[in-house]
Amino acid sequence: MRNVIVSWVIKRKFIYIVTFVIFFSFVVIYLWSSRSVEIVDVHYYSDKDINILARHFPITDRGKLNWWRKNERKILEKYNLPENDFSVYIWNFGDGYQKLSPYDAEDEFYCFPDIKSEFNCIKKDIYMSAEAGVNYYRVFLFSGSGYFYQPKKDSNMLIKQQ
Image (spheres, rainbow, N blue to C red):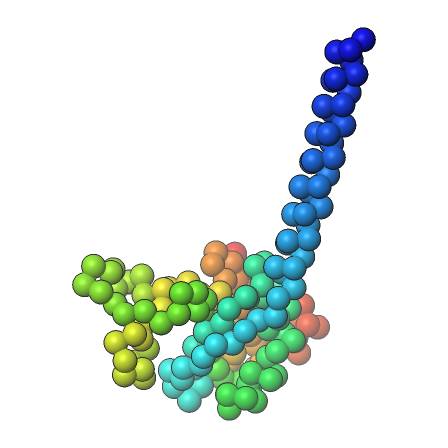
């Protein structure tokens, strides 16, 4: 009888611990995912192509697309980009600007020639790119997937590219 009671107490404690861990995980994930995107810096590649360095970008493709669709108009206006002919590359600012050492592989870093300091490179970790062309189409690229968007033809539907 004593073994049954001890076993029942252990199972009950285990259930409480597992419930607490699951609840705590949900709270951490919610707080982490609800942080707002921070645009740290912007570099112009040309008059219609820019690199945006950001922190706290959404993790999922859907989250990235929703963020872009919500902020596209503001970005185009703020950085004077043409509505139907632009390229925007959004990079993870991560550890900030770094100095490229002789031991670093150059293909792992993206360096900005407009920064005159030797700390002008970031690790190549792109969140997404958004490109537009004539006929108001949009192409969104992520690591491993892409979406094509043409609102006038497709009734605001995103078409996943293979």
